Each structure stands twice: as structure tokens, then as C-alpha cells.
Amino acid sequence: MARRPGYKLEKWEVAIVKAMLAHKYFQQDVLAYFSRPTRSINPARIVAIRDGTKHKGVKAASDAELDNFLNAWPNIDSNTGLHLQGDELLVKAREAMIAAVHTFNSAGLYFRAELFIVTSVIAWTYLLHAYYKREGIDYRHNKNGVVDQTPSGADRYWELGKCLAHGGCPLEQGVINNLNFLTEIRHEIEHRSTNRIDDALSAKLQACCINFNDAIKTLFGKEFALEKRLPIALQFVTFDGVQRASLIGAELPRHIATAMDNFHNGLSEDEQKDPKFRYRVAFVPKVSGKASKADLAIEFIKPGSPKAEAVDRVLIKDGERPKFRPTEIVTKVREVGFPAFNMHDHTQLARQLDARNTGKGYGVTVAKTWYWYEHWFEKIMEKLAEGWSRP
Figure 1: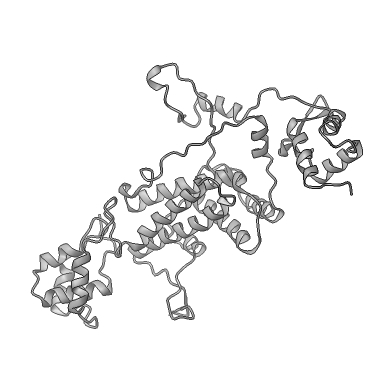
Figure 2: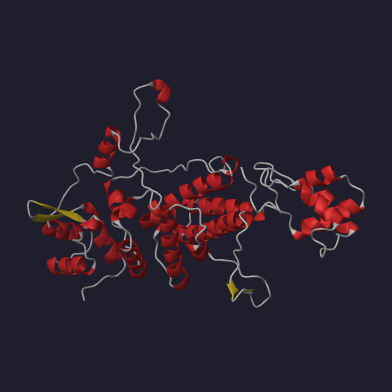
């Protein structure tokens, strides 16, 4: 394997090397302090520093700086072997994604998708910065060959969109599509408030997690995978028919729905189906025929197999749910404490909420006749409790 151009010493490391050589450290001992699994340093680099053929302008570290370095050494993450300073970008990428997942899985939070998206964008940005740095690609903004800087004088590094657009980006197109989609949603989150959007984006968020784990293993090594740090999440409930309809028919803020539609319209059907773009699974209550497998809560099925096709046909398939005519719904509403509610009110509310949109899960057409589910009755009760009145 050819040595990657990013395998080089940082200026602060060169200063430490010079200090160690001044204190009569052997060259092979100096090399041992700066080589690690994520970066192999050629011994010739130490020789070049000693002879002055490289890095002449770097001043040797002070005795205090050398002592601090030696006291902190090896300064690595014991789980991965990553150097906390030399591999800072990769460490931050992993920690940001772990934080994003922990945040999303935390009980009691109401805006989990927004928090996940913002934090995962940071994780991906650090990951690609680490990759470009290792490959010797300058990932700083520049104008006419001059590096652009912030008002405080720091170099400005590429945002995620710029990283994804670069010709050297190592990610598959489905992964890029997923991240561009989440970036668009992040822009909406930053500039406007949102309602709860967790369920509507869950397939994209799941794909984002799996893509990140695949990318970090492919680009840097399997030892940096996150699955050991992030076990499967458990929950306290199963989904009944009403809950499933709620997940399918969750109402989105208009600007979020528009952003999603605009992005989807720019993708082909195959791109939209790509699991790298959105990852969907079917959770099916499972009873094993063998006692030895009775504790397996999840079964992984090969895509395209007969078993997978069978699961696809019953994905979130409901049992025969009770159906109601409009007059029956109105009667139920009156009986629970809203005697003034009438058929005209029912019609007006249904129009306001676009309730006959089958994608919302409030009802179904059977033999050219519309029937309402119990979920529609619950939605009416919710709106009346909020103080809804006829226009």
C-alpha cells in the first residue's frame, strides 16, 4: 500500500522532536513517540529534522512544553487507540455522532430530530475533514489563492456541503443524497421553528447512522466502528393501529414538508429507494420455533428473498380496524360531551385538516364509500379540546 500524503508531523510535533533531539534522545525512540496505528511516520522525517533539511523555521519546544508532552503521553483513547490531539478530528467525529444518537434516544425530549440533525452534521463534517487532512487535500476556503479567515483571524474550513461537493469526496451517491437532504432540513431548522418531525424523518436518520458507521470503518478502519458503543435501543410500548396511523399521518410544518418534497422531486425513483438515502425496517412480533432462538427480538432478512417480499407485503399492515360513517362519528362526539357538534362542523373540520387524504391515516374508501377510523374521532376530540370552533 502506498504511504498516504497525510502521514506527516504537525508543526507542534516538529517542535517537540527538536527538543527531544536536543536532549540526546535516540532517533528510534523519538519515532516511537509519534507513530501510531492511524499514522505511520517514516524514520527519514526524523533524520531530516535532525539534519536541518526540513522544518528549519520551526523553533524547538521549551523544556516545560517537552515535560508536558511526556507527562501526557501516550494521551490516547484506550478503546480505539486514537491520539486525543493528533487524531482530534476523528475523535470529535465519533463523539459527535455518539452524542447525536444518545440525544435522539433520550427519553423526555420533544425535538429529537432537530438535535440529531444538527449534531450529526457536525460529526460528518469532522469525519470528512479528517479524511481530507490525511489525504493531503487542503480543505480551507480560499479566494484567489489566499486562505479565507474569520474575523478573529482563524482559517475558515469547508462546511459539510463543500466537503460533499469536492471531487475527492469518498462517499457513495446515496450517502451524499442523505446528507444533502438532512442539510436542507437543518437550514429550515436554523431559520424557522418546527413542530415535532421525528417520525417523518426516522428513515433518513437511521440511514445517516448506518452510513456514518460504514464510512468510518471503510475510510479509517473497523476498530473505530460505533456498534460496540451504541447497542440496540429498547422501548416500553408496542404499536397498535391508532399509533401506526399516527406515525404514517403525522402532520409536518408546511416549510419542512415543502423542503422535503422539493428535495425528493430532484431524485430519481432508484435514488429515493436507495437504503443509503433512507433506511427502513419492519418490526414484526416474532415467536421462534426453537427454544434456543426464543430470545432473538430482531431477525435480519436478506433483501430480495421470498421472506423479505412477504414482509414487504405486510409492512405495518393493520388488522381489520373498526370503521365509522360520518353520522356515527358525530354521534360519538356528542355523547362524550360536545352536544353542539353537528354534521356541518364535521365537514368543515375535515376540510381544514385535509382529513380525507389517505396518507394521513384517518380513513379509507371501501366500495366507493368513505369510512372513518377511530383515529379520526380522536383527532376531532383533540381539536375540540384545543378550542376549535366553526369558521
